[in-house]
Length: 367
Length: 62
Length: 93
Image (cartoon, rainbow over all chains, first blue to last red):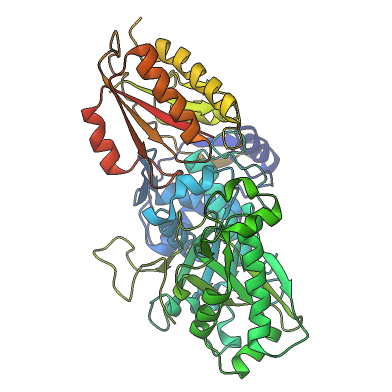
């Protein structure tokens, strides 16, 4: 591949004998997630930077707790290690910059005992360009693009923020999404607005939404076509999360595959309607904590009602998943509203002036 | 401003790492028994006592 | 045949601060608590408050709680520190 530029990379260079030697070097230094990595050679890293038109020393942000500057070169090295091709790097770079927005709380969410992972949702034409598959196995190993993009972000957290298990990463359990947690929305398979548009970006924009998220909680209800009954199952799972994990409201993601989605769409429900329904239905009484062994923290506030969503707009509805199966997923936030989902357009300047409808959206927006 | 940071035993390694990451690898902090969230009042009093002992060393000129 | 690979880690190192001068005594002084507000901290800081006053002669104890236990102290709390003589920050749990 002929590169348009010849960027000067400044990272330290190691000479290794071969592919196996590269593995041992990287594992020994704690630079991996435990899986083999793609050796980040200068040409591979330069190709990523060239594709997105970034100089190696372009600053992607400063992690505030450490006052740590993050450069495009360093992120590209970790993206190559994850298996990213240059075309994947645009998504990685945008996701990373979104994670560095203050409201995401990057240090807090990555160091916490809570053990969340960065959920990345891709919208727009770029999904088709990179081959991101939004149908079968959407939350599993659906395709190369989402696998490597999600992994790149985790490797960057490990290597650029020194977040390693037992070190700064205090996750008690963590979850498998910490390897990779990325999916594309099935925009072609739904009449609903894409998530990015629901959160304020214009039609046709390629975008990512990032959220510090717990593991998916799968629900099943293949015995009705009534949207209220279907969504009541989602609500029940959200309420269970509130009682059993964290009662505090925040951004929730729900993933609705085709079989259930068709019933809801056929009844004329939009994503906004879903948000309004779940805003009302997904809430618990603090006193119910006593039914799940948490009576000691009810105190004198038993009648206080805790909604899972501060507003209908706090719900992020994603159309994704295979064509058959009455399943859905509820993806809870790390810890209430202490972190917020961030949506960013790919190719737009994330820190250029005040946000408008075409650029970064924080937290919530209607659909 | 003289300060003492307090953490539980299970967070010592995290604290040591953050000290290194923030460029003060020899920074000393107070350590108390884990956990705090479910500790009875008597244990919380012991934890405060342990902090006072550390405060003599870390907050005062000796 | 060798392969050249790039270091993925942050090679830059932050230049750290210096330890503030310690007072010889806290008698008559003001101590501030910066709490992460998690369960158990109220009881812990209640005992600490009493012990600081009764045993170290601290005159005043100011309690402040971070708005987000996983984030650094809020800017207004950091601003207030200059009015105190010492800080206790906790609990990392």
